[in-house]
View 1 (tube, rainbow, N blue to C red):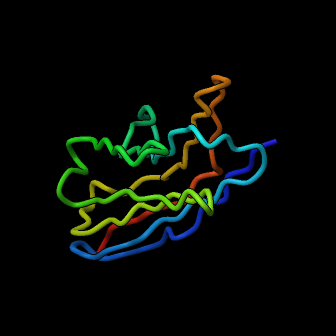
View 2: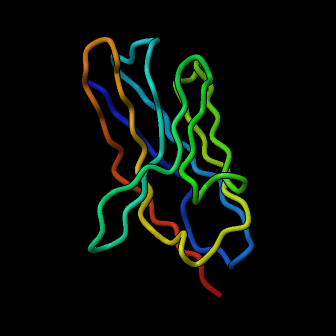
Length: 117
């Protein structure tokens, strides 16, 4: 069984920064993609950024230039550094693990990010 544990959300003022972390445990294959999605009430969950086990990263247009995704394969942990935060970044952020070899996807419990003055 795979478990994803997220941390790092909270309240921040516009222009501020936050760093999200997500640690995966259990049967985590070495070949996988980890990423961050976000969701606001009434809207679909959307991709923020994702990174492969080889280090290739992909960003949503809204995240490009402000957010940086990284990972530590030895710790099965993915990070999302968010800078220059805007009120429209307010959402619940979910960690995602895509186990490519077996075609399974797992989600974290979500962490709230609120950008407000």
